[in-house]
Length: 197
Picture 1 (tube, rainbow, N blue to C red):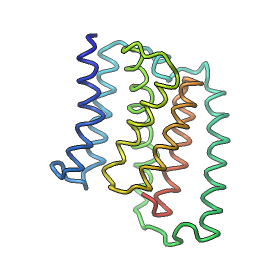
Picture 2: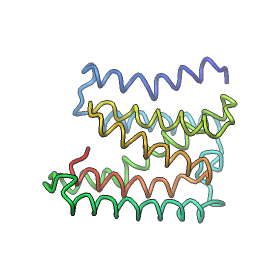
Picture 3: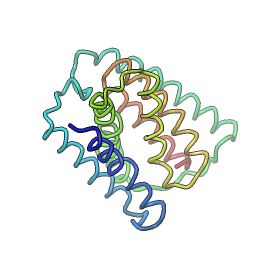
Picture 4: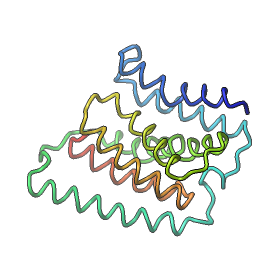
């Protein structure tokens, strides 16, 4: 695939939708609809291009390592959030959300985000012949952080940049998206329930 086409694809998938939502061209309240559409498109593209499951982090060879790293990371998240809540560092007010929202978040939103922002993004970096782990991790974390610019909140950007770096590092090391997805579910669900996003 031509380099220019890959860059155009990156712009259309990872940059343009965020800009359009941030500017109000696309209504913010439909952000999850856009997410599902965009992620479905990346799944379709990956099938069209003939990417293997292994190259997308969907294999089982590194499943154990992927879950191990992310299990410990999830324990750290839970401990951090509990301590922050206990010492009044974050608000105690529960942000009410429908149970259907959480079901959507756990079973649809997080897996789709992880496929698009970890599996597919890293595969595009392979196509671009970007091999240096530090560059791959940084680019991936920046793309994931930029997605959350639609919230217009600096703290959210700082959190997502940090966690994006951690998840990108783990994915780069294990090439397993399942563990990162589990960690994302834990982190995201607690963040939403705590009113951070």
